[in-house]
Length: 317
Image (cartoon, rainbow, N blue to C red):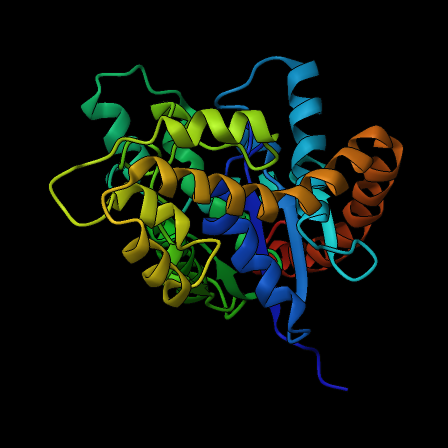
């Protein structure tokens, strides 16, 4: 029987998840995975998160939360390999091999590096070098497809470039992955109209209770110059069809409070089932840890087989 193509995706455990994470990364991945067309791997990118978190207790807790979030969103660990990046040592081994093929000017083109440099931040080696670890994350598993937000497309380009360079210098070892971008929700707006981001403080938490949803939605910045509050509408259309919203927004034209109240109701209705499942999982952390352990073993088996080929190719086997 032919092996189905592989899908891989991951998310850093660097803070409270918000609906931007869900619609920009988690939901597209879950939707693709649920088609049954792929052998799917989902990982908690805890090594990437070391650039931001140097507290072991926080790292452990955030990693658990990310795994529980994926499971609450619909991933079944019996059908999907869900694991922690750190449980597969081949990620960092392959990243080092890629380092030896990669120039500094090439890495200086990375968005994260350029952004940190523009803000005059002190840049650690992990931040500078993270595209190579991300390339390893993807290429280790011969991933055919990688669900990403629009702003993450460069990561796939780095992985493809690196695979091509390795294949050219050594031997045909890596396949070239393709990004899967859900354009309509690739960039989710925050409560101030900018991209939803923890760093901007403009998020709506993914598992927020009704009180928090109300507080965040009522704080959405509105513009009275148009026929509808665009920031409210941009979030609203994530959870309700535009056909339905057309009638609702026409009925309440100019009544921003009523439209925000409708958004509160729709967001709470959408979030409530996931919120309940997430709480169940966080109340049973051993079940989540067990799923991560099983997933780590399965991922390591795939990754180690690939690394045997890589070691032979570069002459260190």
